[in-house]
Length: 242
Image (tube, rainbow, N blue to C red; front, side, top):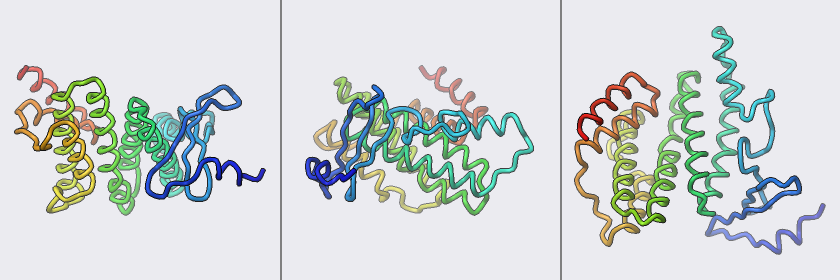
């Protein structure tokens, strides 16, 4: 089928990401993303390509079950490659969903990619570890942005600002502790969140982080690294401060 007319009807904008939502012939919601050489179509839920690898909704779900049922299973480079490809599909979808202002779905997809990064961090080789981890700050930034936009939409500026501050501190801490960046204040993810600050206040200058917010940052970092024992202890501390 020649797509020329479809591409003419929906021109590509090199300066802006453009996406749209529609109902497919199967009655399910589809997300379309306009790219320079065509139109990318994705399913709204589970895997964007609509496949069910090994009968599971996602490849991550399959490999998680594989490790649980077979402790002797040894992951190979193929598993890492396949999961990274799944993460790229989800990445394209959550960018599209953010442009469509479907923030709950953005939170869902960024949470999925954070879970996938956690899984690969545990099972990937040492050489692949940093390659996997370098994508985490962007996913964290998009997850925070979606949460903040929901609070802005609900006219809760104080909660929106609190989430921005926590998100920024989490990203800075990750850059320092894992990627060993000396000046995390200069990373692009923080510039994106600073733009959100300007949407909440006139100057975008964050106020001092409270002790409870500092504990919440530590809690989120513990959960991101799946250190559940530390997370439980931090939850206890937070409950005692309230």
